[in-house]
Length: 298
Length: 268
Image 1 (cartoon, rainbow over the protein chains, first blue to last red):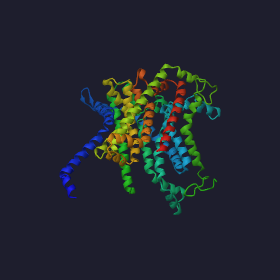
Image 2: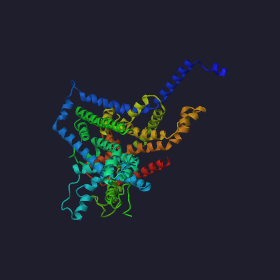
Image 3: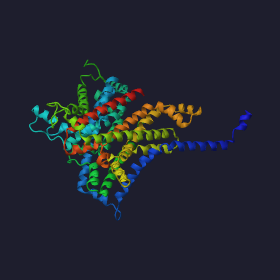
Image 4: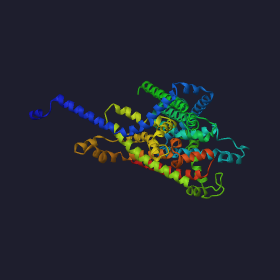
């Protein structure tokens, strides 16, 4: 006993040495993320800062001109189209995705994994391939118009693509997996005996569903809704192809300002507005779910 | 059978037949359009119809005899492969470092590194174009790889961090206390056990790069055009049936990738 007491260093010195060592270790561990940080920093954070700078600093000093220009009716129209489409796509995703996630969460494991595979398949297939599929199906002489005419339901081909309708159909198809996957995960955690209890206490199945089940899945539903809405706001590829130039989305306006007009002031101001909207919605949602879970006492 | 109760609230299968019908339709909506491209790609006519009036390999021949399409395919796969390597190494290193560190900075770093996932891609693309212009990285393989890596890092990190959470880090401590250096302990004890997560992350990185359109559209011109960029530009002008053949090949490829990822997950 006495020997060990003599060989251990003085406690304060030991403590300091240990702290120093711990700090060095923390530094080493943090430095492992340095390569990733350099990449993300130089290709994401710095450029976005630069864009912000370009949007407020013109040839003659600081200016709000780029933002004032966004009040022009043509930009307003783009903004309205973008939000209309985002709301419509989100609404349709709820309508189609909620029932599927609900059913899948109650199926036997084998069936459920089959359904999930069907949801994952489009997720892994190229976005462009899926958009192309819709282009082929919906065009004037496409499969859907041919079938409808063969069945005698319509006389002339319907205008299904290169417009708002086609864009909506394509976008819902792309967004649905993003909506279903988080919702399914949250539905899997719902304790179904609560439904039994509601039923026992005299609630009709419809009432039990709306008053017990739906509130329990609100966090998953919210996550899906926000994900789809935010992705839709900044979406480019599908509207550009299925809209045929008639549906002007915010992201397309950015690309056009840059690639066609080389107008960096406008492009950067549009970009900053899109980023602020996106981050704002995500932040509000995070606050809201934080408030919700504190109310639920989680 | 139909009159048996299906839910805990005594709703029978018959009563919710509409739900089964609706869900079947939604599943059809999710997979049929994409799958219809496959038979249509074997059509002989310029106007793709289903079922095709006559069958041929015409559009596959058109693809395999076009130097432009083949070059774009080569660029895409090259970029995807390099992106996979770069994103998986940097992403795995970062996940490991941030998972083990107790530094408070770690949390912020994690948020920062997953930022590319929530920023609209068009904005990333414009920013990257702006950054690459003065250093001459636009329209180069290196530029594309760097840009796609940034896009893939968050997904690799999420997958690998999930794997690390299931791993008992004390095992690595044991190895180190018995004299293994830290890198050696990581390579021989930790890495083999999170292997499937790392491989899943790598698959995701590959697929992300292969499918990416918007960044490639802005920064990949000339003979460094990727497959998706060429497809997008071709689709904007007119519907070239060669794309049906390419799409079919890509669908087959993604089914293989999906199967691989499911296999990796089942072994976790």
